[in-house]
Length: 196
Ligand SMILES: [Zn+2]
Image: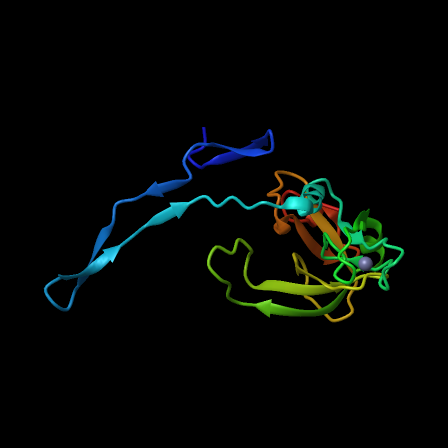
């Protein structure tokens, strides 16, 4: 059994198993320039956070299955009817009616291109991406929003055509299961666990 807490839902309730926090002994902080006098203590803390996806769960589940899901407002009374959102929005921001989930994978394969990008040589704590991280903002035909993601291979350029890749092997069920490569990339060269 994993040392980390595990969660499943039954009867509409979270069911927890295992440890959700660990108490680790503290350690003294001492001053080397003052005879190692006590200055304080470290307080190691480790906890498992329960992050609920709600109605976005279908988006994350689909990434591991090689599909990119978007959402669309189908409310006849909405001025923005037909607007397609990627990133996935559960509700239409204009009429607040629940959007329809649609499969955007083919549109992404055919029309995704870099709107703009930034290359980060450093990252924040807990980032799992290799540096430098090539963040790209992606636009799609017929989509009213722009998606932030990351380019796994090649160098980003404004307007370049990119295609989605998905971590279908051992998915993490997070946004890291989606990445992008330049159009025409050989499938054999994709990062481990990813496929088109
Ligand atoms: Zn709407």
